[in-house]
Length: 345
Image (cartoon, rainbow, N blue to C red; front, side, top):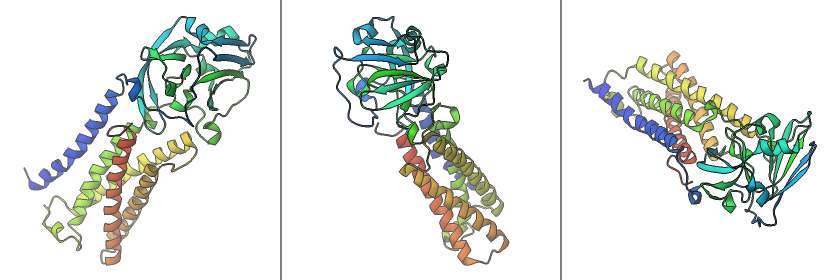
């Protein structure tokens, strides 16, 4: 096999391993997470509630406002569902949730015909809502057990909402009041610009853009390496095999930038749609720097193809391309940590 192709294949190995690691982690997310290892996200400290004194109120535009004690709630026919809780910031955990179907409670209260949403208020001051259609789904439950044990305090004891296919900020904990309303309600995060629907879709999943960015990084490595062959600043680059030609460099660079920009545009849209701002994490700022440097590298490379004697432009092209590539590797690494692949959640 030609030496050049051996290098190309060898460079692919670490990126293939990263993709395998991501997919393996994705498969592990369906496994039950022990209660003491489950991630915790709240707006403040966890309230400690005495179940014997706790009351759940159902109010609003209903025919039958109701109050339930803990014993009342646990006396209803119980249902159990294995569902995955996904935080919009990345942490993920799967548990066997046991409780009562929300629809059964709502049917008893009899919402009016003009009902549009159901609001859930937690004892910690947090609130969020579901449309009446989503709230009436057969898989939405009010859970009081987690993995066949009473809900841990940090997970919402005595009662929390389980809303499959919604991000975690809809899974209200320590619920004390459920209000049925006929207007559009903005909860704690929704009033700060976060998406009111909180739907989890394949295109918004962290692992999708992680894999695509890893593929982009592979082509980026080929682009940077082949670029060294034509750089005066990198003497060893001239020893690279002929397969790393100018056409090879241009092709891999275009593939790299196109994948990177496509994924980035989708990610920016999703970030703004889900959280009302962009960027909103250090990971996001790092990714934004990668995008800027990639564009600079693309533009400077195009100009260089028209004027190959501009040494300053050559230096700018090399520096922006190489630094952007290094930052992309850092972005992927921090993304894997946030996604829990090699993280600490």
